[in-house]
Amino acid sequence: MSHVFDDAIAVTALDDGAFRAHAHPAYANMVGPFGGITAATVVHALQSRPDVLGHPLALTLNYAAPIGDGDWELHPSVIRTNRTNQHWVFHLVQNGQTVSTGSAVFGLHRPTWESTESVPPAVPAADEVDAVDFPDFIAWAANYDKRFVTGALAAGPDGKSDDSTSTLWIRDAPERPLDYPSLTSITDNFYPRVFLRHGTYMPAGTITLTTYFHATPDELTAQGDRHVLATVRAARFGNGHFDADGQIWSGTGDDAVLLATTHQLVYFKNPG
Image (cartoon, one colour):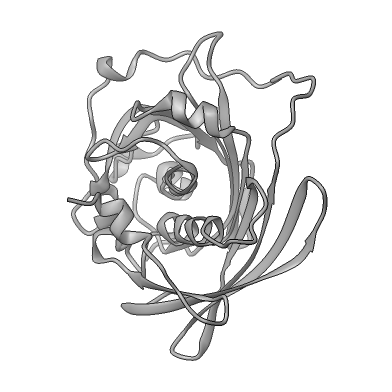
C-alpha cells in the first residue's frame, strides 16, 4: 500500500513537458489544499524531469489563488543550465487559469569548506513530548505527528502570546523516510503566527513561500523516518501582512544538521 503523501504528490507527465496533478482531500486546508503539499508536488515533478540537474537548492511558490478540487497542471521551463546549477520557472494552471507561479534552483553538491552559524533550540527529545492534534477542519495536519515544545495552537483568550515562536518535533504520519518532497512539505507546516499572537483563528493565508534546501541526499537518508525539529517566528505584523522565518533541523545538540530554512509572507485580516 502506498503512503498517502506519495498519493498526494503523484503526477502524470504530459507530452509537452508539463505535469498533471490532483488536489488530494487528505491534505485539504481551510481554503484549498495545504500549501506544503502543493510545493512538494512541484519538487517531486521537477525531480522526475529527465533534464533536471542535481537536487533541489531553492524553491519559491507564489500562491496567486486557491487551488480547487480536482486536477491541476504544472508547466515548468528551464531558463538556464550552468555547470553546477539549473534555473527553472513554472506556473500552475487549473481550469484554464493561473493559480500559482514560482521558480526553482537545482544543482550539484560539491565538497567545500562548511560552517553552520545557526544553532538548534535546546529541547527535550521527541519521545518526551506529547503529540498534539489540530481541529478536524484542518485536514492536512492529521498526516503529521506534531509534538510542540512551545507555541502550540491554543485558540481562545488564554492562547494569546507575546512571542510568535513555535518549536516542535514533526514527521509524517504514518512514518515515512524523509526526502526532498517531504522536507518541502514540512517547511510549510507552521500555522499562521497571527493565530498564536491573538489566541484565535483569523483569516490568513500564505502569499509566497521560499525554501532553501541545505540537506544533501546522504543527510536525508541518514534522517530516515525520525522526527525533525522545526522552529519558526515572525519579525513584524502590520498592514495586513506578516512574515515567518523557520528552520528545519535533523535534531538538537552539537550533531544536529540544518536541513532547510524557510521564509513566508502571509496576509491576514482582523477577526470579526
